[in-house]
Structures are given as structure tokens and as C-alpha cells.
Amino acid sequence: MPNLYFSKKNMATKSILSKSSISFLEKYLNNPSPTGYESGGQKLWMDYLKPYVDTFITDTYGTAVGVINPDAKYRVVIEGHSDEISWYVNYITDNGLIYVIRNGGSDHQIAPSKRVNIHTKNGIVKGVFGWPAIHTRNRGKEESATLNNIFIDCGCSTKEEVEKLDIHVGCVITYPDEFMILNKDKFVCRAIDNRMGGFMIAEVARLLHENKKKLPFGLYITNSVQEEIGLRGAEMITNTIKPNLAIITDVCHDTTTPMIEKKIEGDLQMGKGPVIAYAPAVQNNLRELIVSCAIANKIPFQRNALSRATGTDTDAFAYSNGGVASALISLPLRYMHTTVEMVHRDDVENVIKLIYESLLKIEDNHDFSYFK
Image (cartoon, rainbow, N blue to C red; front, side, top):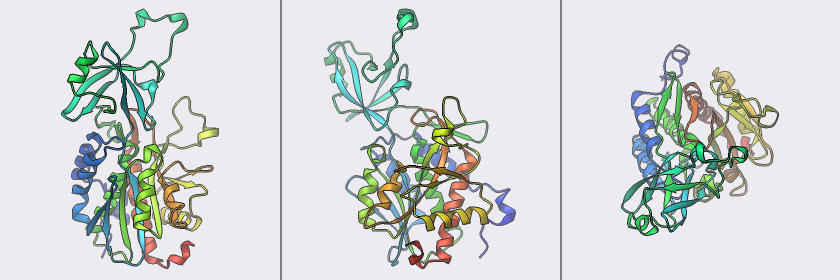
């Protein structure tokens, strides 16, 4: 049967992202999914994925896996992570101000004057990160924002008032910034790192279903939790799945904006294609299969060299179960761990295409001894 989305005629003219796909993406990105509290986002993701898989696996901490062909001998994972950075309430002052600690790599420098959602057992309480007015600061010795001096004001004047709002130490805090499209082809939101990964692997499953592709192996579409605090969800779920092979997708830095040193971070740009990683955790044969797929299908791509670790769930999969052949395909992103993370629509589509075509290439060469 002809490939509906990737014929040479359609490659240049047809977007693979449908209106319903974009609608889901907006809803999924706007939904809060802080590390440790990913369940709401996971339910949305599973509802979207349900028509395209045979069954689901979930674990104790909330990682969700849609499975195609679950009885197959060999198991292939495609994976992203579902959690976003956030804050915890850490200390409430007598005059009703709230000090915080990080839940993941939250950036203290972007906090001043940001609006926040404080999640309580009775719903969301609004607040703001306060900051002294420019008129009151010592301009000769201005303080920068640090974890020690940023604070949240929720309109209360005493600790008791704060507690009456059901705010207590341990409440999680997220930013409310929502999805938008800039200049027709730039997706902007908080938490694109890495709910865009969950979106892209779900789109791969959709295309396999719509193109009626039958894989000779089990495909485990995995949306892991707790990546932002040390790859913890991937560590757990890989021991449940016990895969033979894993293709991970995450984000990497677009290095073309000011104050980024290309000699350190590499030369990467959104709009120029997926980024294929070179790193100790990346299995060479699997990486070369992905490179060959990009070349054969005229999918633009970039290369990125990483050092001891990729810093992504690739590391968790690669070094599990006695060693799992793993590779990393990244999405170039501007302004990581801010509320205005930005990616190019073309790169999103090309990551989806590259994972899809790589799976079909594995289908054609499904002697898994090749990946040893």
C-alpha cells in the first residue's frame, strides 16, 4: 500500500500535522504537568493515543506506555518525557509571603513579575513572583534574582491568610503561560521541554495506524515521568518493558541567539532539522540506521556531539537491562526552561518523519543482532 504521508509528491506539499493534532497539542501543552504530578497530562495523552495502540501499560509513578503488537518477541521503545519544571512552596513568612525551592531545573532569573498557579487540594490559587520597583533599588549595587530573594505574593498579609487558602509547604507551583504560534510556524509555550516529545511519538503511532503499517516487533510508545529530576521515570519503566532497542526524543539548544557560545554548545539552529546525537550512550549501528533514513528520505538533519552523558532519558535506557541499543533524536529549541520555549513546526514534523521512517527501516532489517 502506498505511504499516504511520505510519497515524494506529498513530502514537499502536505503537512503531516492535522487540525486535530494541533488542537491536541495546544490542550496538552496548556495542561500543567509538573514533575511528580503528571497524571492529568498523561490522561490527555492516553486518550489521544488510544485509537492507535492495542493496549496500555502504566506504572506506580505514572509513566504511560501505549503498546502496538504486545505479544511480539522483540520490543522497540520510542520515548519522550511528560513532566515540566516547577516550584515547591518551601516557607511561608509571618506577613504572608512564600519562598520556594525548585522542582526540576526552574530558572530563578525569569521568576520576577511572573504570574503563577499554586496547586492546592481545592484547586488553583493565583499568585505572582514579586520584585522591588526600579525606583526603590540601589542602582549602584543592584541585586540579581536568586533562589534566596525571589518570593511569591498571593495577596495575603499574614501566614494564617495563606494557610486558609489551603496553601502549605509542599504545594507545587507552575506558570500559566499558554500555547501560541508566532509568524505561522513557531510553536511557543512553557513545557515544550518535553511534552512536545510525547506529542511527536503519539503522532508516529497515528501515522503507523493511518498508513496501515504492521510492524514485526512490539512498539512501546513511552511517555516517561520525572525526567527533570534525574531520568527517574525512564529508569523505572525500562526495567518493566525490557526493550531490545530504544529511540529517545528530547530537546536541545538552538545556539543562534545571543549569549550562547557555539564552541561549547555546538552550532544548531531551529528550522534546519532534527538533531542526531553522538555520545557514548548512543549505539553506533542504531544511530547510523537513523542517519541513513534521514538521507534516503531527504529529511534535513543536524549532528550534535555530547560528552559523558546526554542528559536525557537515553542514558537511562542505554545502561539498563545489561545494555539496550539506544539513540537520541533531538528537537532544536530556543529559551529552554523558560515560559517562552520555541520550536519550529518544520522540525517537529521532521522528527516525526525520521522516527517513523527509522521504525520502517528496522522492520526491513529486523534481525536485532545487527544492534549488538
